[in-house]
Amino acid sequence: MSDKILIKNGKLVNPRGKSGMFDILVEDGKVSCIAEAGSMTGDDVIDAGGCIIAPGFVDVHSHFRDPGQTYKEDILTGAEAAKRGGYTSIVLMANTIPTVDNADTVRYVLDKGKETGINIHTCANITKGMQGSELTDFDALKSAGAIGFTDDGKPLLDKELVREAMVAAKKLDVPLSFHEEDPAFIKNNGINHGRASEHFEIFGADREAEISMVKRDIELAKETGADIDIQHISTAEGVELVREARRTHKNVHAEATPHHFSLTEDAVIGFGSLAKMNPPLRTEEDRIAIIEGLRDGSIEMIATDHAPHSMEEKNKGLLQAPSGIIGLETALPLAIMNLVDTGYLSMEQFIERISCAPAALYHLEAGVIEEGRAADMVIFDPKEKWIAGDYASKSENSPFTGKEMTGKIKFTLCDGIIVYRDF
Image (spheres, rainbow, N blue to C red):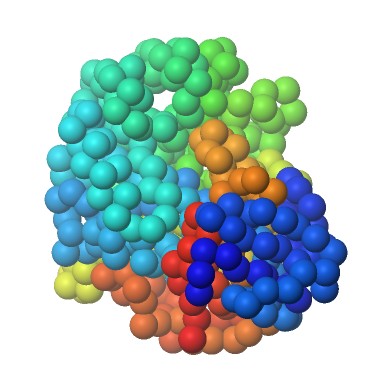
Protein backbone atom coordinates (compact mmCIF):
# COMPACT_ATOMS: atom_id res chain seq x y z
CA MET A 1 0.00 0.00 0.00
CA SER A 2 1.03 3.61 -0.49
CA ASP A 3 1.34 6.30 2.15
CA LYS A 4 -2.38 7.01 1.63
CA ILE A 5 -4.79 4.47 3.13
CA LEU A 6 -8.57 4.64 3.30
CA ILE A 7 -10.28 2.64 6.03
CA LYS A 8 -13.95 1.95 5.35
CA ASN A 9 -16.96 0.07 6.76
CA GLY A 10 -15.67 -0.29 10.31
CA LYS A 11 -17.09 1.07 13.55
CA LEU A 12 -14.83 3.70 15.11
CA VAL A 13 -14.69 3.33 18.91
CA ASN A 14 -12.76 6.37 20.04
CA PRO A 15 -13.59 7.36 23.65
CA ARG A 16 -11.77 10.70 23.53
CA GLY A 17 -12.82 11.66 20.00
CA LYS A 18 -15.39 10.96 17.29
CA SER A 19 -17.07 7.55 17.43
CA GLY A 20 -19.45 5.89 14.98
CA MET A 21 -19.49 4.69 11.38
CA PHE A 22 -16.88 6.77 9.57
CA ASP A 23 -14.43 6.60 6.71
CA ILE A 24 -10.90 7.35 7.88
CA LEU A 25 -8.22 8.64 5.51
CA VAL A 26 -4.59 8.22 6.50
CA GLU A 27 -1.96 10.28 4.67
CA ASP A 28 1.76 10.74 5.38
CA GLY A 29 1.51 8.98 8.72
CA LYS A 30 -1.37 11.03 10.06
CA VAL A 31 -5.16 10.91 10.14
CA SER A 32 -6.05 13.46 7.50
CA CYS A 33 -9.83 13.08 7.45
CA ILE A 34 -12.62 11.41 9.42
CA ALA A 35 -15.78 11.68 7.32
CA GLU A 36 -19.26 10.28 6.95
CA ALA A 37 -19.26 6.61 6.01
CA GLY A 38 -19.28 6.12 2.24
CA SER A 39 -18.22 9.67 1.47
CA MET A 40 -14.63 8.94 0.39
CA THR A 41 -13.02 6.76 -2.25
CA GLY A 42 -9.44 5.62 -2.75
CA ASP A 43 -7.15 3.06 -4.33
CA ASP A 44 -5.59 1.59 -1.20
CA VAL A 45 -8.54 0.56 0.93
CA ILE A 46 -8.80 -1.45 4.12
CA ASP A 47 -12.27 -2.93 4.31
CA ALA A 48 -12.96 -3.03 8.05
CA GLY A 49 -16.43 -4.50 7.65
CA GLY A 50 -17.59 -6.16 10.87
CA CYS A 51 -14.57 -4.78 12.73
CA ILE A 52 -13.83 -2.20 15.40
CA ILE A 53 -11.39 0.61 14.64
CA ALA A 54 -9.77 1.97 17.81
CA PRO A 55 -6.73 3.92 18.97
CA GLY A 56 -3.67 1.69 19.12
CA PHE A 57 -3.39 -0.05 22.47
CA VAL A 58 -0.93 1.28 25.05
CA ASP A 59 0.75 -1.08 27.50
CA VAL A 60 2.35 0.60 30.51
CA HIS A 61 3.78 -2.62 31.94
CA SER A 62 5.90 -4.89 29.71
CA HIS A 63 9.15 -6.78 30.14
CA PHE A 64 11.24 -7.27 26.99
CA ARG A 65 14.29 -8.61 28.92
CA ASP A 66 16.66 -6.50 26.86
CA PRO A 67 19.47 -5.98 27.78
CA GLY A 68 20.64 -9.06 29.61
CA GLN A 69 18.17 -11.91 29.13
CA THR A 70 17.48 -11.86 25.43
CA TYR A 71 17.04 -15.63 25.29
CA LYS A 72 13.60 -14.92 26.82
CA GLU A 73 12.71 -11.88 24.69
CA ASP A 74 14.36 -8.89 23.11
CA ILE A 75 13.09 -5.50 22.08
CA LEU A 76 12.51 -6.58 18.48
CA THR A 77 10.61 -9.79 19.26
CA GLY A 78 8.70 -8.13 22.07
CA ALA A 79 7.59 -5.45 19.63
CA GLU A 80 6.41 -8.12 17.18
CA ALA A 81 4.28 -9.63 19.94
CA ALA A 82 2.95 -6.15 20.70
CA LYS A 83 1.97 -5.55 17.07
CA ARG A 84 0.07 -8.84 16.94
CA GLY A 85 -1.75 -7.78 20.07
CA GLY A 86 -2.79 -4.39 18.66
CA TYR A 87 -0.30 -2.33 20.66
CA THR A 88 1.34 0.73 19.15
CA SER A 89 2.92 2.12 22.34
CA ILE A 90 4.80 0.15 24.98
CA VAL A 91 6.30 1.30 28.30
CA LEU A 92 9.07 -1.07 29.34
CA MET A 93 9.98 -1.98 32.88
CA ALA A 94 13.51 -1.45 34.14
CA ASN A 95 14.47 -4.79 35.77
CA THR A 96 16.92 -5.68 33.02
CA ILE A 97 20.59 -6.69 33.28
CA PRO A 98 22.07 -4.13 33.73
CA THR A 99 19.15 -2.33 35.30
CA VAL A 100 17.91 0.90 33.75
CA ASP A 101 19.47 3.07 36.44
CA ASN A 102 21.81 4.97 34.11
CA ALA A 103 21.48 7.16 31.03
CA ASP A 104 23.42 4.78 28.77
CA THR A 105 20.95 1.94 29.31
CA VAL A 106 17.98 4.28 28.79
CA ARG A 107 19.48 5.34 25.46
CA TYR A 108 20.23 1.73 24.48
CA VAL A 109 16.60 0.72 25.00
CA LEU A 110 15.19 3.73 23.18
CA ASP A 111 17.61 3.46 20.26
CA LYS A 112 16.77 -0.22 19.75
CA GLY A 113 13.09 0.64 20.12
CA LYS A 114 13.36 2.94 17.11
CA GLU A 115 14.01 -0.15 14.95
CA THR A 116 10.66 -1.75 15.78
CA GLY A 117 8.11 0.33 13.88
CA ILE A 118 6.11 1.09 17.03
CA ASN A 119 6.56 3.50 19.93
CA ILE A 120 8.87 2.00 22.54
CA HIS A 121 9.24 3.95 25.77
CA THR A 122 10.97 2.97 28.98
CA CYS A 123 10.86 3.60 32.67
CA ALA A 124 14.05 3.95 34.65
CA ASN A 125 14.69 2.57 38.11
CA ILE A 126 13.66 4.34 41.27
CA THR A 127 16.71 3.01 43.14
CA LYS A 128 20.24 2.26 42.03
CA GLY A 129 20.61 -1.36 41.02
CA MET A 130 17.06 -1.96 42.28
CA GLN A 131 18.60 -2.36 45.73
CA GLY A 132 16.01 -0.17 47.44
CA SER A 133 18.54 1.93 49.33
CA GLU A 134 19.54 4.92 47.17
CA LEU A 135 17.57 6.92 44.64
CA THR A 136 18.75 7.18 41.06
CA ASP A 137 19.35 10.55 39.42
CA PHE A 138 15.77 11.23 38.29
CA ASP A 139 16.69 14.42 36.43
CA ALA A 140 19.45 12.79 34.39
CA LEU A 141 17.36 9.73 33.58
CA LYS A 142 14.39 11.80 32.47
CA SER A 143 16.72 13.91 30.31
CA ALA A 144 17.97 10.69 28.71
CA GLY A 145 14.39 9.79 27.79
CA ALA A 146 12.86 7.85 30.68
CA ILE A 147 9.14 8.66 31.01
CA GLY A 148 8.56 7.20 34.48
CA PHE A 149 10.24 5.34 37.31
CA THR A 150 9.78 1.89 38.83
CA ASP A 151 11.58 -0.94 40.56
CA ASP A 152 8.92 -3.36 39.31
CA GLY A 153 9.83 -6.89 40.28
CA LYS A 154 10.92 -5.71 43.72
CA PRO A 155 8.92 -3.89 46.40
CA LEU A 156 10.34 -0.76 47.98
CA LEU A 157 10.41 -1.32 51.74
CA ASP A 158 11.92 1.97 52.97
CA LYS A 159 9.00 4.31 53.54
CA GLU A 160 11.13 7.45 53.76
CA LEU A 161 12.89 6.57 50.51
CA VAL A 162 9.51 6.14 48.80
CA ARG A 163 8.41 9.53 50.08
CA GLU A 164 11.62 11.07 48.73
CA ALA A 165 11.02 9.39 45.36
CA MET A 166 7.48 10.74 45.20
CA VAL A 167 8.65 14.28 45.92
CA ALA A 168 11.23 14.01 43.14
CA ALA A 169 8.72 12.53 40.68
CA LYS A 170 6.16 15.23 41.47
CA LYS A 171 8.70 17.93 40.59
CA LEU A 172 9.39 16.26 37.24
CA ASP A 173 5.70 15.45 36.54
CA VAL A 174 6.39 11.76 35.91
CA PRO A 175 4.58 8.74 37.37
CA LEU A 176 5.96 6.12 39.73
CA SER A 177 4.84 2.50 39.35
CA PHE A 178 4.91 0.23 42.39
CA HIS A 179 5.17 -3.53 42.79
CA GLU A 180 3.16 -3.96 45.99
CA GLU A 181 4.28 -7.17 47.72
CA ASP A 182 5.76 -7.07 51.21
CA PRO A 183 8.05 -10.11 51.55
CA ALA A 184 7.21 -10.30 55.27
CA PHE A 185 3.93 -11.95 54.23
CA ILE A 186 5.39 -14.28 51.60
CA LYS A 187 7.07 -17.65 52.00
CA ASN A 188 6.50 -18.99 48.47
CA ASN A 189 5.95 -16.30 45.85
CA GLY A 190 3.55 -16.63 42.95
CA ILE A 191 1.05 -18.90 44.74
CA ASN A 192 -1.89 -17.56 46.71
CA HIS A 193 -2.07 -18.34 50.42
CA GLY A 194 -5.39 -20.13 50.30
CA ARG A 195 -6.77 -23.01 48.28
CA ALA A 196 -3.71 -23.10 45.99
CA SER A 197 -1.16 -23.16 48.79
CA GLU A 198 -3.17 -25.78 50.65
CA HIS A 199 -3.19 -27.96 47.54
CA PHE A 200 0.59 -27.81 47.29
CA GLU A 201 1.04 -28.00 51.08
CA ILE A 202 3.00 -24.75 51.29
CA PHE A 203 2.34 -21.28 52.72
CA GLY A 204 2.41 -19.23 49.53
CA ALA A 205 1.88 -15.45 49.39
CA ASP A 206 -0.66 -13.90 51.73
CA ARG A 207 -2.95 -11.16 50.43
CA GLU A 208 -1.77 -8.84 53.21
CA ALA A 209 1.52 -8.54 51.30
CA GLU A 210 -0.31 -6.40 48.74
CA ILE A 211 -2.83 -4.73 51.02
CA SER A 212 -0.27 -3.33 53.46
CA MET A 213 1.89 -1.74 50.77
CA VAL A 214 -1.03 -0.35 48.76
CA LYS A 215 -2.25 1.32 51.94
CA ARG A 216 1.20 2.81 52.65
CA ASP A 217 1.80 4.13 49.15
CA ILE A 218 -1.65 5.65 48.82
CA GLU A 219 -1.08 7.62 52.01
CA LEU A 220 2.28 8.84 50.71
CA ALA A 221 0.73 9.80 47.37
CA LYS A 222 -1.96 11.78 49.15
CA GLU A 223 0.74 13.58 51.11
CA THR A 224 3.06 14.35 48.18
CA GLY A 225 0.65 14.69 45.25
CA ALA A 226 2.77 12.39 43.08
CA ASP A 227 1.12 10.31 40.35
CA ILE A 228 1.44 6.66 41.33
CA ASP A 229 0.42 3.47 39.57
CA ILE A 230 -0.52 0.50 41.75
CA GLN A 231 0.67 -2.27 39.48
CA HIS A 232 -1.09 -5.58 38.70
CA ILE A 233 -3.63 -5.27 41.53
CA SER A 234 -4.82 -8.65 42.79
CA THR A 235 -6.95 -8.26 45.94
CA ALA A 236 -10.44 -6.98 46.61
CA GLU A 237 -9.07 -4.98 49.54
CA GLY A 238 -6.48 -3.34 47.29
CA VAL A 239 -9.19 -2.38 44.82
CA GLU A 240 -11.27 -0.83 47.58
CA LEU A 241 -8.30 1.15 48.91
CA VAL A 242 -7.75 2.60 45.43
CA ARG A 243 -11.47 3.29 44.97
CA GLU A 244 -11.66 5.19 48.24
CA ALA A 245 -8.46 7.14 47.53
CA ARG A 246 -9.58 8.23 44.07
CA ARG A 247 -12.68 9.89 45.46
CA THR A 248 -10.44 12.74 46.60
CA HIS A 249 -7.01 12.08 45.06
CA LYS A 250 -6.96 11.52 41.31
CA ASN A 251 -3.18 11.14 41.37
CA VAL A 252 -3.72 7.56 42.60
CA HIS A 253 -3.96 5.16 39.67
CA ALA A 254 -4.13 1.38 39.30
CA GLU A 255 -3.78 -1.25 36.61
CA ALA A 256 -5.22 -4.75 36.23
CA THR A 257 -3.79 -7.53 34.11
CA PRO A 258 -5.83 -9.79 31.83
CA HIS A 259 -4.72 -12.82 33.83
CA HIS A 260 -5.95 -11.36 37.11
CA PHE A 261 -9.42 -10.61 35.70
CA SER A 262 -9.59 -13.92 33.80
CA LEU A 263 -8.22 -16.58 36.17
CA THR A 264 -8.22 -17.61 39.83
CA GLU A 265 -5.81 -19.60 41.98
CA ASP A 266 -7.45 -22.75 40.60
CA ALA A 267 -5.38 -22.15 37.45
CA VAL A 268 -2.18 -22.71 39.44
CA ILE A 269 -3.54 -26.02 40.64
CA GLY A 270 -4.33 -26.96 37.03
CA PHE A 271 -1.38 -25.46 35.15
CA GLY A 272 1.37 -25.29 37.76
CA SER A 273 4.19 -22.89 36.96
CA LEU A 274 2.48 -21.69 33.76
CA ALA A 275 0.00 -19.88 36.00
CA LYS A 276 2.55 -18.78 38.60
CA MET A 277 2.93 -15.01 38.77
CA ASN A 278 3.61 -12.12 41.13
CA PRO A 279 1.27 -11.14 42.66
CA PRO A 280 -0.46 -14.50 42.49
CA LEU A 281 -3.85 -15.33 41.08
CA ARG A 282 -6.29 -15.20 43.97
CA THR A 283 -9.96 -16.03 44.56
CA GLU A 284 -13.09 -15.66 42.45
CA GLU A 285 -14.17 -12.87 44.82
CA ASP A 286 -10.93 -11.03 44.08
CA ARG A 287 -11.33 -11.55 40.34
CA ILE A 288 -14.84 -10.07 40.39
CA ALA A 289 -13.66 -7.17 42.56
CA ILE A 290 -11.01 -6.35 39.97
CA ILE A 291 -13.62 -6.42 37.22
CA GLU A 292 -15.89 -4.16 39.27
CA GLY A 293 -12.94 -1.81 39.73
CA LEU A 294 -12.46 -1.69 35.98
CA ARG A 295 -16.17 -1.13 35.48
CA ASP A 296 -16.46 1.85 37.82
CA GLY A 297 -13.11 3.36 36.83
CA SER A 298 -11.36 2.78 40.15
CA ILE A 299 -8.89 0.74 38.10
CA GLU A 300 -8.23 2.94 35.08
CA MET A 301 -5.85 0.76 33.09
CA ILE A 302 -5.47 -2.69 31.64
CA ALA A 303 -1.75 -3.59 31.51
CA THR A 304 -0.32 -6.92 30.43
CA ASP A 305 2.73 -7.43 32.68
CA HIS A 306 4.10 -9.34 29.67
CA ALA A 307 6.77 -11.46 31.39
CA PRO A 308 8.55 -13.92 29.08
CA HIS A 309 10.47 -16.91 30.47
CA SER A 310 11.96 -19.92 28.71
CA MET A 311 10.16 -23.24 29.03
CA GLU A 312 13.33 -24.67 30.58
CA GLU A 313 12.92 -22.17 33.41
CA LYS A 314 9.20 -22.79 33.76
CA ASN A 315 9.79 -26.55 33.86
CA LYS A 316 12.04 -26.37 36.92
CA GLY A 317 9.11 -27.14 39.20
CA LEU A 318 6.52 -24.91 40.81
CA LEU A 319 8.66 -23.56 43.63
CA GLN A 320 11.81 -23.03 41.56
CA ALA A 321 10.22 -21.68 38.37
CA PRO A 322 10.18 -17.90 37.86
CA SER A 323 6.89 -16.04 38.10
CA GLY A 324 5.14 -14.44 35.14
CA ILE A 325 3.41 -15.14 31.85
CA ILE A 326 3.40 -13.58 28.40
CA GLY A 327 0.36 -11.41 27.73
CA LEU A 328 0.56 -9.04 24.78
CA GLU A 329 -0.94 -11.40 22.20
CA THR A 330 -3.91 -12.54 24.30
CA ALA A 331 -4.92 -9.30 26.06
CA LEU A 332 -7.62 -8.33 23.54
CA PRO A 333 -9.56 -11.61 23.51
CA LEU A 334 -9.31 -12.07 27.27
CA ALA A 335 -10.80 -8.62 27.76
CA ILE A 336 -13.54 -9.23 25.21
CA MET A 337 -14.45 -12.61 26.71
CA ASN A 338 -14.26 -11.63 30.37
CA LEU A 339 -15.23 -7.95 30.35
CA VAL A 340 -17.16 -6.99 27.20
CA ASP A 341 -19.09 -10.12 26.22
CA THR A 342 -20.08 -10.62 29.86
CA GLY A 343 -21.59 -7.13 29.99
CA TYR A 344 -19.26 -5.69 32.62
CA LEU A 345 -17.69 -3.12 30.28
CA SER A 346 -18.92 -1.53 27.09
CA MET A 347 -16.56 -1.62 24.12
CA GLU A 348 -15.93 2.09 24.67
CA GLN A 349 -14.99 1.52 28.33
CA PHE A 350 -12.64 -1.27 27.34
CA ILE A 351 -10.85 0.94 24.80
CA GLU A 352 -10.59 3.69 27.40
CA ARG A 353 -8.88 1.29 29.84
CA ILE A 354 -6.46 -0.25 27.32
CA SER A 355 -5.54 2.83 25.32
CA CYS A 356 -6.68 6.25 26.46
CA ALA A 357 -6.04 6.13 30.20
CA PRO A 358 -2.60 4.47 29.96
CA ALA A 359 -1.53 7.10 27.43
CA ALA A 360 -2.77 9.90 29.67
CA LEU A 361 -0.85 8.69 32.74
CA TYR A 362 2.44 8.77 30.84
CA HIS A 363 1.64 11.96 28.86
CA LEU A 364 1.90 10.08 25.57
CA GLU A 365 0.68 11.37 22.21
CA ALA A 366 -1.56 8.33 21.90
CA GLY A 367 -5.01 7.08 22.83
CA VAL A 368 -7.10 9.06 20.35
CA ILE A 369 -7.87 8.97 16.62
CA GLU A 370 -8.11 12.58 15.53
CA GLU A 371 -7.47 14.56 12.39
CA GLY A 372 -3.89 15.85 12.31
CA ARG A 373 -2.57 13.29 14.78
CA ALA A 374 -0.41 10.24 14.21
CA ALA A 375 -2.34 7.35 12.70
CA ASP A 376 -1.77 4.85 15.51
CA MET A 377 -4.73 2.50 15.41
CA VAL A 378 -5.90 -1.06 15.62
CA ILE A 379 -8.60 -2.85 13.65
CA PHE A 380 -10.05 -5.97 15.25
CA ASP A 381 -12.92 -8.39 14.79
CA PRO A 382 -14.62 -8.73 18.19
CA LYS A 383 -16.35 -11.98 17.14
CA GLU A 384 -13.66 -13.95 15.33
CA LYS A 385 -12.52 -17.09 17.13
CA TRP A 386 -8.98 -18.46 17.08
CA ILE A 387 -6.70 -20.73 19.09
CA ALA A 388 -3.98 -19.11 21.22
CA GLY A 389 -0.46 -20.17 20.30
CA ASP A 390 2.18 -19.75 17.58
CA TYR A 391 3.35 -16.62 19.35
CA ALA A 392 5.56 -13.87 17.95
CA SER A 393 7.19 -13.69 21.38
CA LYS A 394 10.32 -15.78 21.88
CA SER A 395 8.62 -17.34 24.90
CA GLU A 396 5.50 -19.48 25.24
CA ASN A 397 4.85 -19.36 28.99
CA SER A 398 1.07 -18.96 29.04
CA PRO A 399 -1.79 -20.99 30.52
CA PHE A 400 -3.94 -19.83 27.59
CA THR A 401 -2.04 -21.72 24.89
CA GLY A 402 -4.39 -24.01 23.00
CA LYS A 403 -7.50 -22.25 24.31
CA GLU A 404 -10.18 -20.85 22.01
CA MET A 405 -10.14 -17.06 22.01
CA THR A 406 -12.79 -14.59 20.84
CA GLY A 407 -11.54 -11.35 19.33
CA LYS A 408 -8.83 -11.14 16.67
CA ILE A 409 -6.47 -8.36 15.64
CA LYS A 410 -6.73 -7.82 11.88
CA PHE A 411 -4.50 -4.75 11.38
CA THR A 412 -2.18 -2.68 13.53
CA LEU A 413 -1.06 0.68 12.14
CA CYS A 414 1.60 2.92 13.66
CA ASP A 415 2.40 6.32 12.16
CA GLY A 416 0.16 5.34 9.26
CA ILE A 417 2.18 2.23 8.40
CA ILE A 418 0.65 -1.23 8.58
CA VAL A 419 2.98 -2.98 11.04
CA TYR A 420 0.79 -6.08 11.42
CA ARG A 421 -1.78 -7.68 9.16
CA ASP A 422 -3.66 -10.91 9.84
CA PHE A 423 -3.57 -12.85 6.60
